[in-house]
Image (cartoon, rainbow, N blue to C red; front, side, top):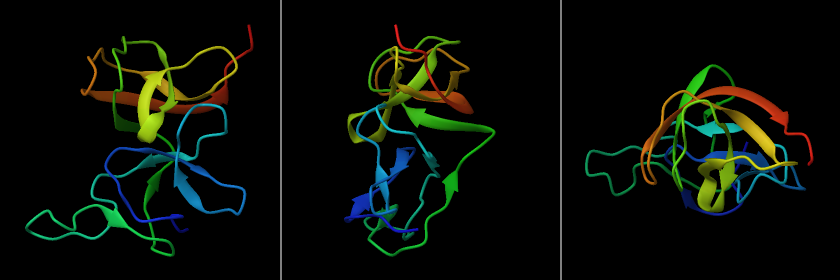
Length: 124
């Protein structure tokens, strides 16, 4: 699997684009693939290259069980979670694709523990 353009990953939601490449999800309007695993790309002691990936690189993606995502806004325990700008976590709205359910409450910028259960939320 490859990323469309150079990116630095850490706990980001991912999806496939129309060409089958793995890209960072920008919202919950398309099916979500899973979560990038921390330090998913190059790894170095300085941290400068840590987490970087480019098109064609192999990438480990978590597609089940429990993972972590960075919250873009407040998320409460038990709320359904989707992706938002930059692949971060947000509360899912009607009709969006859900990546899972929050197992803890967090403020914006916090690490949300997510039970991965992928489905599309019913439209209003």
